[in-house]
Image 1 (cartoon, rainbow, N blue to C red):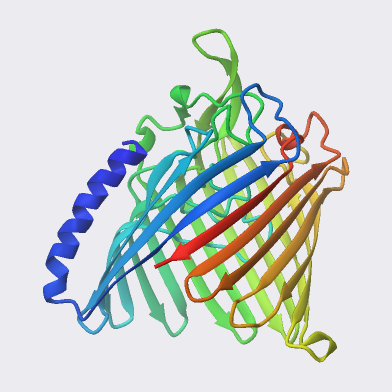
Image 2 (image 1 turned 120 degrees about the vertical axis):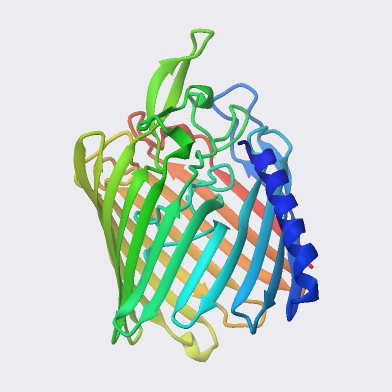
Amino acid sequence: MNNFSTTCAASALACSFTAITPAIAADFEVTGFVEPELQVFASHGNVPGQKRFNSSVALEVTAEAFWDNGDQFVVFTPFARLDQNDGNRTHADIRELKYAYVTGDWEFRVGVDKVFWGVTEVAHLIDIINQTDQVESIDGEEKLGQPMVSVSTVQDFGVFDFYLLPYFRERTFPSMSGRPASDIPIDETQTMYGSDDKRQHLDFATRYSNTFEDWDVGVSYFQGTGRDPVLTPGFDAGGNLVLIPLYAQIRQTSIDVQATKDAWLYKFEGFWRRELGEEYIQATGGIEYTFYQIFDTAYDLGIVAEYIWDDRGANAANAFANDTVAGLRWTANDEASTAVLLASVIDMDTQATSISLEAERRFGNDYFVALEARFFENIERTDPLFSFADDDFIQLRVARYF
């Protein structure tokens, strides 16, 4: 099932919902945004056809219907982008299409949904339910909708979540004309799986979370098709070198902890994973300290410091194996929600450095502007980020909400 056929099928289902629900809905609302985007790259790309300038436009709509005093609701969120140069980035997806029923301490959900696990700022190691929509952002924070059936219950001794994931979503990758992108093309026509069931493998996940005074703790388990593809060199039908994705079967146990102590935040997340007969551990953690109302103003300034570790050491599958993170977060605390985050990640083995700047602000009631810049320095040829070495860029998005 490709993205567009998924969209059409889901749209038909959503229309069915919306045709039924108005008569009984206590509340029905449609919101969304249209968002033009401009990307400017500092230099020409390594691959012929890659442009210094790129434009695109995204559209996202969310329709929500609540009834039965809010104990039942349907949410439908389709998303689409039309890109000037990257055919793979011109895509559509169902971010959400779910029906939820709440009764007492229990909540049941079925459909397409998004679930986020994790607490740290840069590396989201334990976030595994949804597949990464990599054509949308290289930081891994944009996700594809995941078909699922889930049950949650809130008890005095914690929250329990259970997930059945009947259909696997492959990661999206930029085309050769897209940027930032791998210098070696990724041949998704040769995608391999660790299970004969391929996309139809039934994955399972569960999570326990609770708050102990200042401490938020989560323990999770996942068993099924790994979301991170193993990229292995191969050749396409024309004899050209390509990277072939392999989605292995994995078992993963993870933990995340966040403590709030006055102006201090302490964060940790990590996992143990078994994959392709190998067992390994990845972890990240750090602190964030906030200076409130600096210089007697309404502004806050936060200092972020984190460390990312992979017990396999430097490897082609993970760009963050022995890396430090340093960042500054400035928030204006104004009605426009003005905020700026500046962060750098430094490889302690090679001194390879990536710098990111994210600034955002609302204008009036309908417009939201986001500016993003990313720079890569001292990237060695053996580093997984080497393909991005010539992809320094600035990106501007202006969203018009309705």
